[in-house]
Length: 300
Image (cartoon, rainbow, N blue to C red; front, side, top):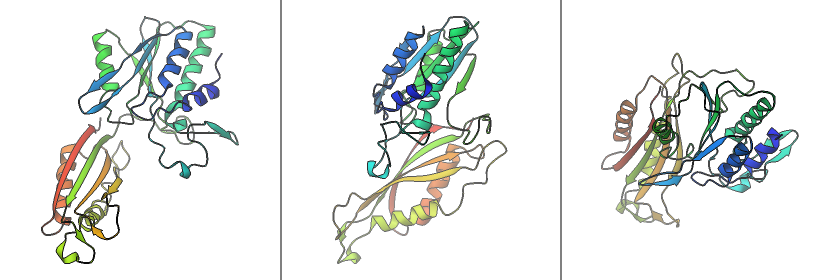
């Protein structure tokens, strides 16, 4: 019998930062095959995005098919000096498991796998049990779940019930019930000015100054206060960069990226219109910018 904590630690020790598989799917596949699951590795690719490996595993062939959906990929760790532990060491301190992916969501995968193993020890399910595990949840989300669902349809694999192991109950099981999902969209803002020397600012157009004003306007007010079924929408700036290695050069270009998680009070089209309105009003006279938007999902 596997131990859930031990399996979670083994999964965390796999450095599966999107789009790298990092050994996490290999470990999960070998564990599930040892339990009698039939496993399918599903690598997908698309132009402009990295190749991603995925895993679909099923025990049994009858219906209903009870599926656990999740992901083994994790976000980057950031500067390791900001961690009190090695992010991939899966260290336990005072009864708490630390590591990248411990919460989102390798521990959930381990708990489900071990729960199924214990159940199979005592009885055979009347239907089937399956796992739909992607390696592209934290990345562009192009070569993951959507293409896996297409593969299921093409191969007559039906899912009747699905549970997702995301950490949506912060303090206790059942604390929060989800009946839908928020929308998500990413924005890449590029502001163009005129490079110059800091000693002669009147001969330059500081793109950094312009982008600061634009981002301040973007975050000045909340998007909403929430809807009947969703929490308030959020906008988070994730990067700001001018690519300037010196202290005496006024940057001619500045870039920022941001993500909006939005509820059913908005649509991606309306939010895009709002973004342009805010940027047009805040960039200042003579300013120029480009805005690229990618919509990952709309509220549903």
